[in-house]
Length: 429
Image 1 (tube, rainbow, N blue to C red):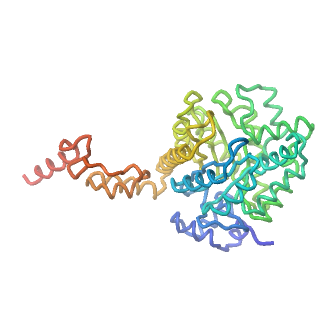
Image 2 (cartoon, rainbow, N blue to C red):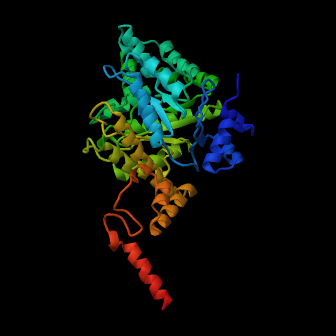
Image 3 (cartoon, helix red, strand yellow):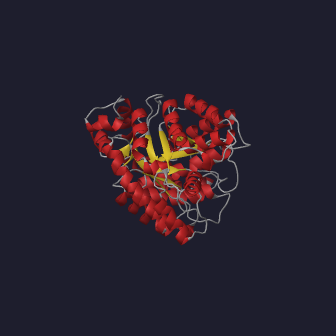
């Protein structure tokens, strides 16, 4: 069996992915290997289908952005999902997750894995649920072996990281049912597992036989994204007992992953009021021993459908500044419908800005330098330099009214030009 990237890092051995990430991040290889060995950073990778553009996620690195794509029942097109993959990566997404639940789920995943240059993640439980549906069975009737076989299949196919909702135990579910929530369970994987556990009167198989999951992940060197099946689906439910109980279990599992030399990151909320985001991030970092933290948004208000990509970007910026390492984008169609290619691109763009804002607060040199270069280019009215420094180069389209005199808004009354000429004249005197 090949050594995992975490095992190699523990032995001081480098690899192609470490070398590429080290160069991209401007972090020494030895330091990067130390972070990986300690579980403070992950580089999702597949032994079966190595990706051209690996990424590092975790301490001291730039905040990364994930884009979700995938089909659903009645909305299935391999060609359309490949366009979304290309659009997301072109817009700047560092990873993609194929969350297909249509009848063509395997066909879509195979196509995405063949085409993607960036790491690809999945939720294998969705795949198992689709197979049950195609066989005319209910998801509560799937077997434990079917759940684990879906994880194994995705490893064999070349998936780089998998979300597995391992923290949703009977104990955490008890807190949910005893406390009551406004929005109950909003995680699709969480709801499937909860229904299965209740119907079969059994513990979550992924938590009960966590060693079996580790064995599969180690075999294919897949990164485990320890999922938050009980993440809050509204601000009213944030940081409740069920969420914290799940987080405590995830913290225990992070330790098991490190002992097995399996890379792991932890997923978090969800919907969180602005004032609770920092507390959530700091709590996760403490309970999960500094493991990389992956958040959905988070969304800071429930009242802006159609603008949730901006709501998520606001929460993402705060989360990243507090120490979150990985932002899952939110599209304008969140809570409304099936996202289009344009929705995917808009979601990525908003999350990239959020990640950059967070990186500035973290003091990431790359982010601070980029802003300084942009400011200098603005002062010099160098439009091409601004375009190169911008997170949004697509915004710099040709404008016939833009010149060295100023932009179309101010023209000859450009504040910076007037001030610069006046100060230069004053200095001569």
